[in-house]
Image 1 (cartoon, rainbow, N blue to C red):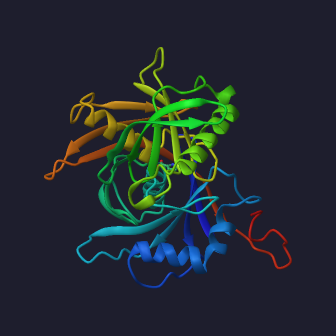
Image 2: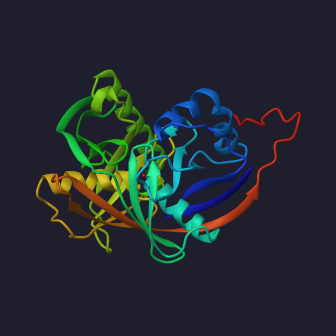
Length: 311
Ligand code: PYC
């Protein structure tokens, strides 16, 4: 399997360039289902230990399917626990990787994801902006009872994945608290399930996001995001920043085209802005940097007991 690894503000992306599964035809959402049902061993081989860390997000390149699309590619994102709909840092990593491979040049490129087409722009060999899918706040000021934390208030929002956004982080957002933050976020996720608080159509809220206002520096906000496989996002999380921008926009705290700088728990940054489309929906654009660090052939030796990863 030929893979190219990059990181976007510290958060890794592994693009399968060759040797991935043939998912056949149908919409990308149908192919994502088929990936999970029939070819999940490819996901495990690509992103589980011992070949990878838990933070890795995989990106399977697929031929685009939408009839009117002038898309340069289709993509299905996945991680250590399953499949993602959209991934902001992963899109930035993917576009930098396609540039590195000379498959695209500087400029605008449409990319098909399982939740729709996103417009990307390769601004330099390492900088990408992503105009994400329409984002919105579904439920405002929801209070849940959380074991060990008591009542926690937050917003449920969509930014390409489902998020529970907690303005008042239960613990200060610094690197020495990453384990405690992960545990607190895991309890919140569990409480959301127990208290039947979901996204649209009962979708599980599988990303938990805490915020803090930095005392100094250029960022408007620092965040900590727990991903579905319980790894934390080293980047400021593109879909999480989109969900945050949607909440700010809906509460009148951010105007169209006004810039929002989101910083991650490790200090990497995304710049975000939004526009309203003809239907009045919030369309965020996230800009960040990715760097390639490996162009690798993964080897699966006969007899390797952990060929499919440590599941
Ligand atoms: O950047 O959207 C993102 C993301 C989702 C999960 C990890 N990163």
